[in-house]
Length: 262
Image (cartoon, rainbow, N blue to C red; front, side):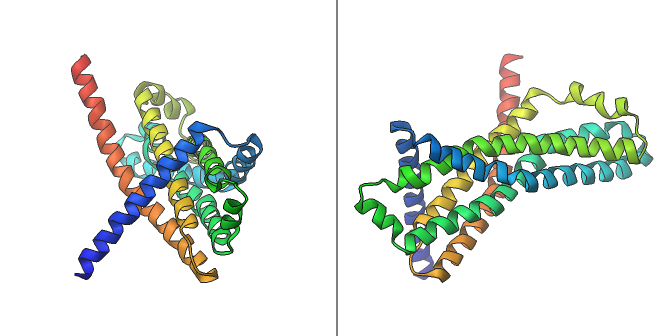
């Protein structure tokens, strides 16, 4: 009986979340929020995240190139080190790790801020003054997230490949042409688009979950912390699940398109 009730509660929460997302996009399409609100969130979510994304992307490239070199050197395949770094950063590690950093820095902040406003009745005060919280609080954060996370992902990928180049060429003595030459041959536009699609989906998922959890908070300071923790953990879990599903589905779609038009 308890399991059934829990499943029913999950379905209710899922329905409320979907309604929340639809309402958020409906608010955006009816009338965009003020530019000043969007600009503030672009700076908060994007510019202030550059340091942590830079460190994440660059260090990931260093580790990828190091592991690739040691694993491939004794097999005579060291020439594909650059290709492995570029492929991994573009399709998997770039989008996922950037999304993780985004959730940890931006998502937690969004949930804590909105949850604090909710439990201190600031949201109710906005409603009483005929101010739409969805337009004023949620929409600017959603627009900024959909813009900045894909850009941060591209930035992270570039730094990752550059970090891999530095460690492979400057430390291991790999020739620069050996590192770069396979990349334009075997890295296809699909590799870029799969990373871009993942970044957009992760941005939509992260911002909406964190905003939803923040706007649903009740109680006091303890509940703000619990809402923030639940939002971050849920985002991490969903990113991992969706990463697998997107990788599988996008590659199946590519194979089908190739088969139809070949």
